[in-house]
Image (cartoon, rainbow, N blue to C red):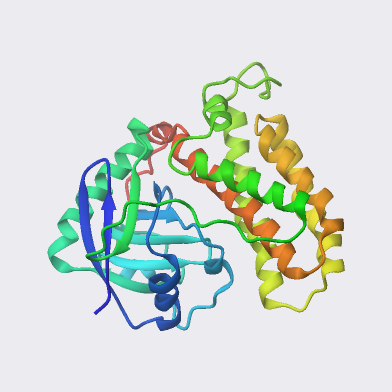
Length: 314
Protein backbone atom coordinates (compact mmCIF):
# COMPACT_ATOMS: atom_id res chain seq x y z
CA UNK A 1 0.00 0.00 0.00
CA UNK A 2 1.39 3.38 -1.02
CA UNK A 3 0.76 6.03 1.62
CA UNK A 4 1.10 9.81 1.73
CA UNK A 5 1.90 11.84 4.80
CA UNK A 6 -0.01 15.14 4.80
CA UNK A 7 1.21 17.77 7.25
CA UNK A 8 -0.34 21.12 8.15
CA UNK A 9 2.60 23.03 9.57
CA UNK A 10 0.96 25.79 11.64
CA UNK A 11 -1.57 23.67 13.59
CA UNK A 12 1.05 20.88 13.76
CA UNK A 13 -1.33 18.21 12.48
CA UNK A 14 -0.24 15.28 10.30
CA UNK A 15 -2.40 12.55 8.80
CA UNK A 16 -1.75 9.49 6.65
CA UNK A 17 -3.65 8.80 3.43
CA UNK A 18 -3.76 5.51 1.54
CA UNK A 19 -3.55 5.89 -2.23
CA UNK A 20 -6.31 3.82 -3.83
CA UNK A 21 -6.81 2.01 -7.15
CA UNK A 22 -9.69 4.14 -8.45
CA UNK A 23 -7.42 6.12 -10.80
CA UNK A 24 -4.13 4.21 -11.08
CA UNK A 25 -2.68 6.50 -13.77
CA UNK A 26 -3.27 9.62 -11.67
CA UNK A 27 -2.01 7.89 -8.54
CA UNK A 28 1.19 6.87 -10.34
CA UNK A 29 1.65 10.48 -11.45
CA UNK A 30 1.27 11.78 -7.89
CA UNK A 31 3.55 9.12 -6.42
CA UNK A 32 6.28 9.14 -9.05
CA UNK A 33 6.40 12.76 -10.24
CA UNK A 34 4.62 15.08 -7.83
CA UNK A 35 5.56 14.36 -4.23
CA UNK A 36 7.19 15.74 -2.19
CA UNK A 37 5.82 19.27 -2.42
CA UNK A 38 4.37 22.06 -0.29
CA UNK A 39 1.65 24.63 -0.93
CA UNK A 40 -0.62 27.21 0.65
CA UNK A 41 -3.68 25.50 2.12
CA UNK A 42 -7.02 26.86 0.95
CA UNK A 43 -10.46 26.06 2.33
CA UNK A 44 -13.53 25.69 0.12
CA UNK A 45 -15.81 28.72 0.27
CA UNK A 46 -18.93 27.47 -1.50
CA UNK A 47 -18.62 23.67 -1.38
CA UNK A 48 -18.63 22.89 2.35
CA UNK A 49 -16.11 21.09 4.56
CA UNK A 50 -13.44 20.64 1.93
CA UNK A 51 -9.72 21.48 1.85
CA UNK A 52 -7.80 22.07 -1.37
CA UNK A 53 -4.40 23.35 -2.41
CA UNK A 54 -2.61 24.30 -5.62
CA UNK A 55 -0.20 21.74 -7.06
CA UNK A 56 3.19 22.78 -8.48
CA UNK A 57 2.64 20.75 -11.65
CA UNK A 58 0.70 21.48 -14.83
CA UNK A 59 0.37 17.77 -15.64
CA UNK A 60 -2.81 17.53 -13.58
CA UNK A 61 -4.46 20.12 -15.85
CA UNK A 62 -4.68 17.89 -18.91
CA UNK A 63 -4.59 14.32 -17.55
CA UNK A 64 -7.93 12.54 -17.93
CA UNK A 65 -9.09 10.47 -14.95
CA UNK A 66 -10.21 6.90 -15.52
CA UNK A 67 -12.97 7.24 -12.94
CA UNK A 68 -14.98 10.06 -11.38
CA UNK A 69 -17.44 9.82 -8.54
CA UNK A 70 -20.74 11.13 -9.88
CA UNK A 71 -21.59 12.83 -6.57
CA UNK A 72 -18.75 13.78 -4.25
CA UNK A 73 -21.15 14.70 -1.45
CA UNK A 74 -21.65 11.00 -0.67
CA UNK A 75 -17.91 10.26 -0.48
CA UNK A 76 -16.64 9.19 2.96
CA UNK A 77 -14.93 11.87 5.02
CA UNK A 78 -11.23 11.67 4.33
CA UNK A 79 -11.59 11.04 0.58
CA UNK A 80 -8.73 12.63 -1.38
CA UNK A 81 -9.54 14.00 -4.85
CA UNK A 82 -7.36 15.18 -7.74
CA UNK A 83 -8.81 18.04 -9.78
CA UNK A 84 -8.03 19.33 -13.27
CA UNK A 85 -8.09 22.77 -11.65
CA UNK A 86 -4.58 21.78 -10.48
CA UNK A 87 -5.70 20.90 -6.96
CA UNK A 88 -5.65 18.08 -4.50
CA UNK A 89 -8.74 18.29 -2.31
CA UNK A 90 -9.79 16.44 0.84
CA UNK A 91 -13.37 16.09 2.05
CA UNK A 92 -13.57 16.26 5.84
CA UNK A 93 -17.28 16.88 6.46
CA UNK A 94 -20.61 17.72 4.77
CA UNK A 95 -20.48 19.01 1.20
CA UNK A 96 -23.08 20.71 -0.97
CA UNK A 97 -21.10 20.58 -4.25
CA UNK A 98 -22.23 17.38 -5.94
CA UNK A 99 -20.13 17.77 -9.11
CA UNK A 100 -18.10 14.74 -10.25
CA UNK A 101 -14.55 14.36 -8.90
CA UNK A 102 -11.68 11.91 -9.33
CA UNK A 103 -10.75 10.10 -6.09
CA UNK A 104 -7.15 9.02 -5.58
CA UNK A 105 -6.96 8.18 -1.87
CA UNK A 106 -8.46 8.08 1.59
CA UNK A 107 -7.21 9.38 4.94
CA UNK A 108 -6.85 6.38 7.24
CA UNK A 109 -9.78 6.00 9.69
CA UNK A 110 -7.65 6.60 12.79
CA UNK A 111 -6.66 10.04 11.43
CA UNK A 112 -10.06 11.38 10.33
CA UNK A 113 -10.63 13.21 13.63
CA UNK A 114 -7.25 14.91 13.23
CA UNK A 115 -8.22 15.79 9.65
CA UNK A 116 -11.40 17.44 10.91
CA UNK A 117 -9.35 19.41 13.43
CA UNK A 118 -7.07 20.59 10.61
CA UNK A 119 -10.13 21.48 8.55
CA UNK A 120 -11.56 23.65 11.31
CA UNK A 121 -8.20 25.39 11.77
CA UNK A 122 -7.99 26.09 8.04
CA UNK A 123 -11.56 27.40 7.96
CA UNK A 124 -10.75 29.81 10.78
CA UNK A 125 -7.63 30.90 8.88
CA UNK A 126 -9.52 31.56 5.63
CA UNK A 127 -12.63 33.08 7.19
CA UNK A 128 -11.26 35.02 10.14
CA UNK A 129 -7.59 35.06 11.17
CA UNK A 130 -5.89 35.11 7.71
CA UNK A 131 -3.07 32.95 9.06
CA UNK A 132 -1.16 31.37 6.17
CA UNK A 133 -1.27 27.59 6.62
CA UNK A 134 1.42 25.62 4.80
CA UNK A 135 0.64 22.06 3.73
CA UNK A 136 3.41 19.55 3.02
CA UNK A 137 2.80 16.28 1.18
CA UNK A 138 5.36 13.48 0.96
CA UNK A 139 5.63 9.71 0.81
CA UNK A 140 5.08 8.29 4.26
CA UNK A 141 8.39 7.69 5.97
CA UNK A 142 10.41 10.04 3.76
CA UNK A 143 12.54 12.69 5.46
CA UNK A 144 12.22 15.79 3.30
CA UNK A 145 14.10 19.06 3.86
CA UNK A 146 13.66 20.78 0.47
CA UNK A 147 10.21 21.72 -0.80
CA UNK A 148 11.35 24.08 -3.57
CA UNK A 149 9.24 24.27 -6.71
CA UNK A 150 10.40 22.12 -9.63
CA UNK A 151 12.63 24.05 -12.00
CA UNK A 152 10.92 25.33 -15.16
CA UNK A 153 11.61 23.69 -18.54
CA UNK A 154 14.50 24.87 -20.70
CA UNK A 155 13.56 26.30 -24.09
CA UNK A 156 16.86 27.14 -25.77
CA UNK A 157 15.93 30.76 -26.55
CA UNK A 158 17.90 32.98 -24.13
CA UNK A 159 15.49 35.90 -23.72
CA UNK A 160 12.44 33.60 -23.46
CA UNK A 161 14.27 31.46 -20.94
CA UNK A 162 15.08 34.59 -18.93
CA UNK A 163 11.36 35.43 -18.85
CA UNK A 164 10.41 31.89 -17.79
CA UNK A 165 13.01 31.98 -15.04
CA UNK A 166 11.84 35.39 -13.82
CA UNK A 167 8.21 34.24 -13.62
CA UNK A 168 9.27 31.02 -11.87
CA UNK A 169 11.35 32.95 -9.32
CA UNK A 170 8.41 35.27 -8.59
CA UNK A 171 6.18 32.23 -8.07
CA UNK A 172 8.68 30.63 -5.71
CA UNK A 173 9.02 33.79 -3.61
CA UNK A 174 5.27 33.95 -3.08
CA UNK A 175 4.45 30.25 -2.90
CA UNK A 176 4.21 30.33 0.92
CA UNK A 177 4.67 34.07 1.61
CA UNK A 178 2.01 36.44 0.22
CA UNK A 179 2.94 38.57 -2.80
CA UNK A 180 3.23 42.26 -1.95
CA UNK A 181 0.82 43.37 -4.67
CA UNK A 182 -1.98 41.12 -3.36
CA UNK A 183 -1.35 42.35 0.18
CA UNK A 184 -1.48 45.95 -1.03
CA UNK A 185 -4.79 45.43 -2.83
CA UNK A 186 -6.35 44.00 0.32
CA UNK A 187 -5.02 46.92 2.33
CA UNK A 188 -6.33 49.54 -0.10
CA UNK A 189 -2.87 50.56 -1.31
CA UNK A 190 -3.74 50.72 -5.03
CA UNK A 191 -1.97 53.41 -7.02
CA UNK A 192 -4.85 53.85 -9.50
CA UNK A 193 -7.35 54.07 -6.62
CA UNK A 194 -9.51 51.58 -8.52
CA UNK A 195 -12.93 51.39 -6.89
CA UNK A 196 -15.84 53.71 -7.58
CA UNK A 197 -16.75 56.39 -5.03
CA UNK A 198 -13.46 56.11 -3.14
CA UNK A 199 -13.77 52.55 -1.81
CA UNK A 200 -11.80 49.40 -2.71
CA UNK A 201 -14.13 46.59 -1.59
CA UNK A 202 -15.59 46.29 -5.09
CA UNK A 203 -12.05 46.21 -6.49
CA UNK A 204 -11.22 43.19 -4.32
CA UNK A 205 -14.38 41.49 -5.59
CA UNK A 206 -13.44 42.16 -9.22
CA UNK A 207 -9.85 40.99 -8.71
CA UNK A 208 -11.27 37.73 -7.38
CA UNK A 209 -13.54 37.49 -10.38
CA UNK A 210 -10.76 38.06 -12.94
CA UNK A 211 -7.71 36.23 -11.57
CA UNK A 212 -9.49 32.90 -11.09
CA UNK A 213 -10.79 32.51 -14.69
CA UNK A 214 -7.57 33.90 -16.16
CA UNK A 215 -5.63 31.08 -14.51
CA UNK A 216 -8.09 28.20 -14.36
CA UNK A 217 -9.93 28.78 -17.64
CA UNK A 218 -7.77 30.80 -20.02
CA UNK A 219 -4.19 29.76 -19.27
CA UNK A 220 -4.95 26.22 -18.11
CA UNK A 221 -7.32 25.88 -21.06
CA UNK A 222 -4.51 26.77 -23.44
CA UNK A 223 -2.33 24.11 -21.80
CA UNK A 224 -5.06 21.52 -22.37
CA UNK A 225 -5.23 22.52 -26.04
CA UNK A 226 -1.49 21.93 -26.46
CA UNK A 227 -1.66 18.48 -24.90
CA UNK A 228 -5.01 17.25 -26.23
CA UNK A 229 -5.27 18.71 -29.75
CA UNK A 230 -3.12 19.06 -32.85
CA UNK A 231 -3.40 22.86 -33.01
CA UNK A 232 -0.36 24.33 -34.72
CA UNK A 233 2.02 26.74 -33.06
CA UNK A 234 0.83 29.46 -35.46
CA UNK A 235 -2.76 28.93 -34.33
CA UNK A 236 -1.74 29.00 -30.67
CA UNK A 237 0.15 32.24 -31.27
CA UNK A 238 -2.93 33.74 -32.86
CA UNK A 239 -5.50 32.78 -30.23
CA UNK A 240 -3.48 33.27 -27.03
CA UNK A 241 -3.63 37.08 -26.74
CA UNK A 242 -7.40 36.99 -27.13
CA UNK A 243 -7.70 34.80 -24.05
CA UNK A 244 -5.28 36.58 -21.71
CA UNK A 245 -4.51 40.17 -22.77
CA UNK A 246 -7.70 41.99 -21.69
CA UNK A 247 -8.05 40.45 -18.20
CA UNK A 248 -4.37 41.00 -17.46
CA UNK A 249 -4.60 44.67 -18.46
CA UNK A 250 -7.60 45.14 -16.17
CA UNK A 251 -5.77 43.37 -13.34
CA UNK A 252 -2.79 45.67 -13.85
CA UNK A 253 -5.12 48.62 -13.36
CA UNK A 254 -6.36 47.07 -10.10
CA UNK A 255 -2.82 46.65 -8.76
CA UNK A 256 -1.38 43.43 -10.23
CA UNK A 257 1.26 45.23 -12.27
CA UNK A 258 3.68 42.28 -12.33
CA UNK A 259 1.05 39.96 -13.77
CA UNK A 260 0.24 42.52 -16.45
CA UNK A 261 3.91 42.85 -17.35
CA UNK A 262 4.52 39.10 -17.38
CA UNK A 263 1.48 38.60 -19.63
CA UNK A 264 2.56 41.32 -22.07
CA UNK A 265 6.10 39.93 -22.25
CA UNK A 266 4.66 36.44 -22.77
CA UNK A 267 2.49 37.52 -25.68
CA UNK A 268 5.42 39.46 -27.15
CA UNK A 269 7.59 36.32 -26.88
CA UNK A 270 5.15 34.12 -28.81
CA UNK A 271 6.61 35.20 -32.16
CA UNK A 272 10.05 33.93 -31.11
CA UNK A 273 8.92 30.43 -30.14
CA UNK A 274 9.95 27.57 -32.42
CA UNK A 275 7.71 24.68 -31.34
CA UNK A 276 4.75 23.69 -29.19
CA UNK A 277 6.94 22.44 -26.33
CA UNK A 278 8.44 25.90 -25.95
CA UNK A 279 4.92 27.32 -25.96
CA UNK A 280 3.88 24.87 -23.25
CA UNK A 281 6.91 25.76 -21.12
CA UNK A 282 6.17 29.48 -21.30
CA UNK A 283 2.40 29.32 -20.79
CA UNK A 284 2.60 26.72 -18.00
CA UNK A 285 5.00 28.95 -16.05
CA UNK A 286 2.69 31.96 -16.40
CA UNK A 287 -0.32 29.81 -15.49
CA UNK A 288 1.26 28.62 -12.24
CA UNK A 289 2.14 32.20 -11.30
CA UNK A 290 -1.43 33.33 -12.00
CA UNK A 291 -2.99 30.45 -10.09
CA UNK A 292 -0.65 31.18 -7.18
CA UNK A 293 -2.02 34.75 -7.11
CA UNK A 294 -5.51 33.29 -7.02
CA UNK A 295 -4.71 31.15 -3.96
CA UNK A 296 -3.53 34.20 -2.04
CA UNK A 297 -6.38 36.37 -3.23
CA UNK A 298 -8.91 33.80 -2.07
CA UNK A 299 -7.14 33.42 1.25
CA UNK A 300 -6.92 37.13 2.05
CA UNK A 301 -10.39 38.20 0.92
CA UNK A 302 -12.59 39.29 3.89
CA UNK A 303 -14.94 36.32 3.76
CA UNK A 304 -16.20 37.00 7.27
CA UNK A 305 -18.72 39.36 5.66
CA UNK A 306 -20.52 36.10 4.89
CA UNK A 307 -22.09 36.26 8.34
CA UNK A 308 -24.16 39.18 7.01
CA UNK A 309 -25.81 36.92 4.41
CA UNK A 310 -27.11 33.80 6.17
CA UNK A 311 -29.53 31.50 4.40
CA UNK A 312 -33.10 31.55 5.63
CA UNK A 313 -34.00 28.61 7.81
CA UNK A 314 -35.42 25.67 5.87
